[in-house]
Amino acid sequence: MRIIILGSTGYLGSKLATSLVTRNHEVLCIKRESSSIKRLETIIEYIDFTNITNIAETLKQKKPYDCLINTACVYPRNAQNDMDIFEANFYVPLKILLACVPYGIKKFVTIGTGLPNNFNTYSFSKNEFARFCEWYMNQNTKNELKHICNIKLENFYGKDEPTERFIPSTVKKLKHNDKILLTEGDQRRDFIYIEDAIRAITLVVEKQGLPKYMDLPLGTGIGVSIREAIDYLKLLTNSKSELCFGAIPKRENEPDSIADCTKMKDLGIDIKYSWQDGFKNLL
Image (cartoon, rainbow, N blue to C red; front, side, top):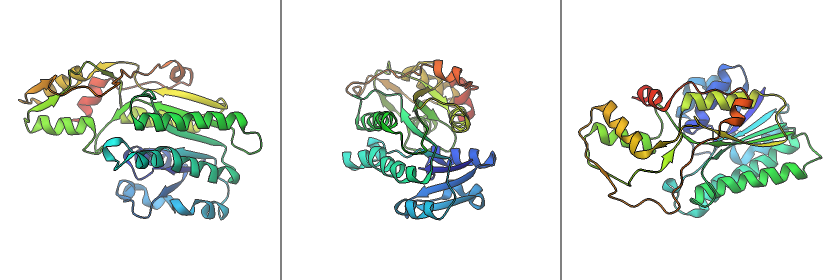
């Protein structure tokens, strides 16, 4: 297949690009002029690049691509303001999707979230983009786009992920025996190891006969409390950190978020790593 990836220079996108190249797909990576390609160094000779402002011109010069994948995102902690979040999670993927459609894209896979709309600007922008995609497919009858899949990805983690994310930042504190201020930690999350996530997304990209539009929850289906997860990481690291549960308040509308794996099983997606095994691999 000929595949375009938006967000290819990020953690998830670079892992996915590597998986697809390994499986002999042709990959075009969309990037900003200023984006580092360090995460793509091992496959640099096997991929093409185009600037995010130049996508239409690039597609005019090449034979049609089969699939567009959106892995781009911005979280509130990385954004200067709400506009940054909506631009990255809604406006940019919308612009790229609509730019690619006239050039024969047949499938669009976008990485969304299992978090509910009302949690924060990240979850709202991701879910609103998915709703646009669903509306668009219901209106769409005049082009070659046949399938859109919104992957409602739960908390993915793995080796060499950005240090500001929850698990690596916690592990760093534990290894330094730092005192850690936490909420009560009773909120439950579904932790999926990066290798399972990439394998599942790759399967969706390659899968034939998907519905016209589908939301696909992706996780292990197991809910783990934040308290339980951090206690286990402390055990694995032999840390002497003082864990101060309840020292800070939970965020407003803090949800539990656990994938319903029914659709995953219907597509033949299985999970190899329990959250405990994934944490062990991480360390």
